[in-house]
Length: 148
Figure 1 (cartoon, rainbow, N blue to C red):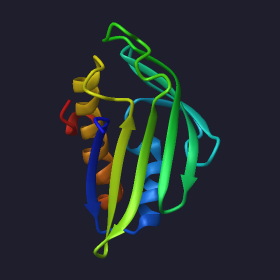
Figure 2 (figure 1 turned 180 degrees about the vertical axis):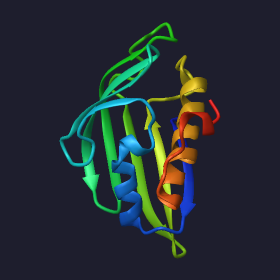
Figure 3 (figure 1 turned 30 degrees about the vertical axis):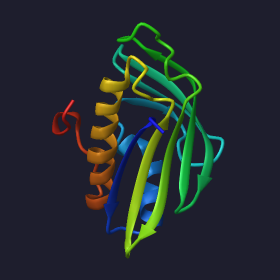
């Protein structure tokens, strides 16, 4: 599997992690329109004129898993502006030795696509930085706290 994946472990419970993941506005900086917290919800993410994508929550298992399906996308900085269309963004939550592990995978974001480097770096910052901060401190990181 060459899909972009990143994993981290926290002291919080799987239910606390699940709640933080679904609080997308608190950790994914940009404009977010729509609901993000339950099965069937659809939301659009926009960041300046660089990125717009529409996600549908296709799987939502409290304390265990969240999956978003990208139905529409526009990435201004790559030749194929629709690289994300049809991809899936997954958050797998599991207990490991008294802690909670979060495994993030963007299925379809592979080294062969043009945005792999920029997008995987951004995901690393959002997921490993801002989401992790939200889970552990109650606050996501502002854009200037993240490494672009």
